[in-house]
Amino acid sequence: MLPELKITPLRYVLAVVDQGGFHAAARQLHRTQPALSMAIRELESRLGEALFERGAQATLTPFGRYCVPRFRELITQHDRLSRELTAQVERQAGHLDMAAVPSVASRLMPGLLADFVVRYPGIKVSLHDGNADFVREQVLAGEVDLGLTSLWEGNAALSFTPLMSDALGVVCRDDHRLAGRKEVHWQELMEESLIGNGTSRLLQGTDAAALREHYAFYISNMISLTAMLVAGMGVTTLPRLAFPEEYERLRFIPLSEPRVEREIGLLQLAGRSLSPGARAMADFVARALE
Image 1 (cartoon, one colour):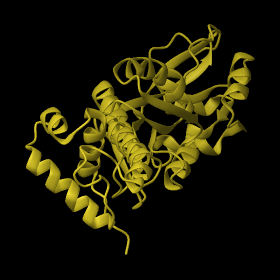
Image 2 (cartoon, one colour; image 1 turned 180 degrees about the vertical axis):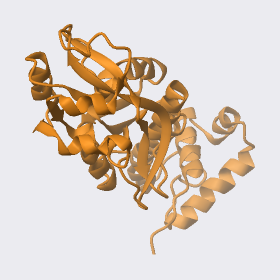
Image 3 (cartoon, rainbow, N blue to C red; image 1 turned 180 degrees about the horizontal axis):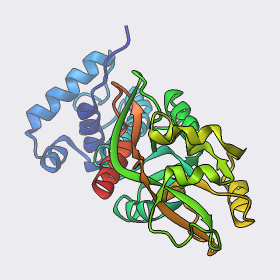
């Protein structure tokens, strides 16, 4: 049966060696010499061999000379691990993987990550972007710790914490007849050349659901969708965060009837604890977006 090695007696042995005697080691460790000697004798008993020569002040036996460098290596590894674990618990170090829908990844995450790395410089973050289905699958598969997304449908295996609302609107070119409007009723879109996209599912179950039957095109890729809009090929509906505002020729007009919003929030596995780094991110994002 292997002997159980406790760290403290090993430290005592090294102190005796480094300080040149039991008395000096006891003084340096703030222990009494009898207590120090007893702990080392108990260690020798567990190992089944003496570490120090009897009657010789701090003279190692051959077995002791064999053990001392190995004790040092074990204590070094122990202390390194303790520091790493403490840093994890105190959210000073670690790594986390996140997934976010493109609109959140491009609009919200740059500012959030810039502030997060200042506060937690030791935590490394990997960010993956994709549509809501991609984010959900990444979280379900355990490929990422957290998702920042909208939740299309519930799943008992997932826990979703809503943090903010993102209203749906109409996107068109600046010379379109609707471009100067402050709001648009969904029925006005029935006469338009409509372009569907991945967020069009938000209309399902609303008064505007009929629009989904009148799409002239369906484009899931945001770059291609933007190109079609800039070319004046039609209009589409998008959440405000997904609106490509860097394109000067495009306009966003809120949809007044019905008022449709998607909830943006944190997605994680239900009943599963987050790592300290992921918990730090979840708390940080919640405070920033609530």
